[in-house]
Image 1 (cartoon, rainbow, N blue to C red):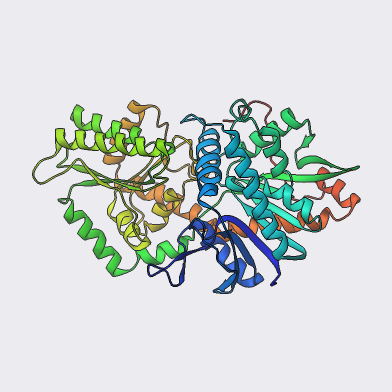
Image 2 (cartoon, rainbow, N blue to C red):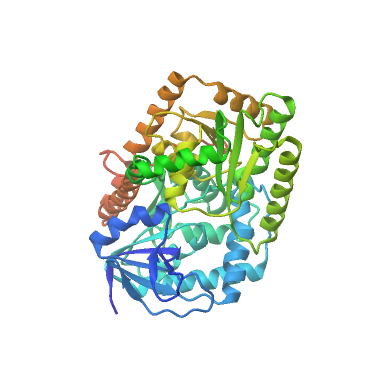
Length: 495
């Protein structure tokens, strides 16, 4: 069996089946893009599900990476993925915007599938290797992997928010999940507040000591230090800049504007169809602006791209019905024969078409009620090579921590959102340019490769320093400044 010094463990493999079902193609998405250069350099392996229930696929190589498929049955997909991952953890970790469902059968399936992933990783990683586990579907894997392979260095990155303790405490299996995550040496989060929420939950539930540089984890008769730290994820900014500069993409942007009747302003929302994204709030604000006469369909159009998501989960079926009913009502009230209030697109688009939409849009609406990061905000900014356009950004998205030059909004405040949209519609070009240049500098200075390097450097440094008891104590103190640091933890609940 092929063994690798560096292994990524994620719910999905970084490839999708080709339409003819005969081959594979690289999946779109930030994580795959971020880790591709790392995997190539390390000749690494990637453990994940192939995306089809009951499909048994043998390990294979793809573009320099050894792929190790994990088989999931239809029952596993229903209970572990659609059930516990997306109907328990997802709503709980997103501030209970929708009510989480707690089912013991779902938890049992989650434990079983996590163990399957851990065992697959343990088999493929070389002695003393590094394993990087990704996201909320696999929160138990770090501990399971440590028990199977104590020789490994283990990292975990949490792509979604980690909730405040008062919400997290609802989870019946709260201690088991914390213990699972603490199997990692470095536990990465999108925001400082998420790392603080995690450390607070550890203190309250497990009574472990937490210090500015980490969490003291009892392990037999010894104590190990685990770091919990913010590593905000980003995008491959250069790829968006390159696409935005192509004449055919710029021409496509003009065609999009013409197809919408050449309104003075185009507003754009691009989201998975998910209740965390604030799409209903956005539509309500836009409908009221039209109703109030503060905007007209001749003057401005909202384009809403809502890509299909979790279509077998009841909450998502209901959400789609509500959104499409709202769009129909607003369009019925305000459309003319030549202009539309909302162009609603329930489908996914290739990156080239998305960049054309970004170039066509004068205002980008990111109104998430809670979001780990929201990479669409960064994609829009990177694409605006003309230094024009306005980003309206929810303060509840992780991107708000880095993108203070956007118009920050509270999506629950409909009147405030309406005022911000009007301000964006009327913003002078000079102010647009000033704000957009600052946003673009941030996105270019901290791209997705920086994110992966930052995390892996922290993991590497920590592993070296924790190799002896004396070094472990040095990490705890952080006196020399070279060890990864956990920002000081505020004892009040961090939302």
